[in-house]
Length: 330
Ligand code: AQP
Image 1: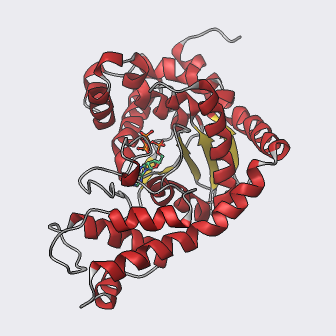
Image 2 (image 1 turned 30 degrees about the vertical axis):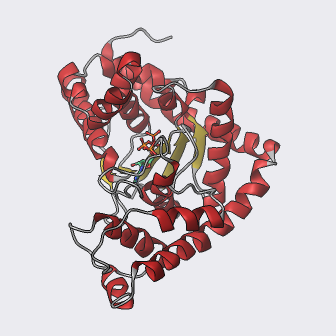
């Protein structure tokens, strides 16, 4: 039986948070041994909001080093930079031609991000989910491991795959999102009703993968909680619930175990331990990252080899698509 195919990516739009780590990258590692995996650094997506060019370059290499430091293995997975494989853009154009404006305008991310920068609304932000569909469909992907926030975009990719297949005959595999229940949506430490996001203006809202131990302790200590004083998992204590989710993912304890462990103890003790489990998991990643980021030759080797492998597969799908829509072979 053929191995299932996995595709996912993260934008190099800033430094990575533990939200990106828990919702996405941490889950990618274990998939490498079971499936054929493609993991991309999606720089084309990043420019849907304004970026400083030199920062984008730095963030792209940083993200590659973080992928590797977290345990992505170029021997097992194809790791590449999205803009190095132009087929992503070529397929986007074709998919744009079967995308409906109404459906795109209902995408939550578009609605949220367009509200944040109304004077600078660009067309790319609107068609972002079509590019994401192209990313996924080019590799004949079965599974897309993402956080809860990206579920709607994977559903659009499914719709577009089905629409294309119906119109032009079977071409794309219809992908499914793979969303882990635990940690599917990590919330801001300052506003537990909003997701933790690397582009948040309030730095205390997120913890970065590369934050040092003291910063992590300070941010967790300042995390918004409530006046109940009980470590209990419920809808009224959103701040505590979020910290419990984070603690659970990093410690391997279930929510019930955490409730029992902190029964009768105050938030102070709990928060100290939350900070320590985060620090413990991130420390080896940070050490590895520091080694890798100074080895530019190795990083270049990884993304060049990744590009070659990705492009080969992507072009196979693109040629098929071009033939089906009626373009004359180049
Ligand atoms: N708070 C979160 N909880 C769980 N998963 C999350 N992800 C992001 N935030 C959380 C998952 O991380 C992956 C990569 O996301 P992305 O960089 O492509 O874009 P994003 O979802 O828009 O992430 P950010 O941090 O909010 O970036 P900005 O601020 O640039 O928009 C995805 O799988 C996502 O689900």
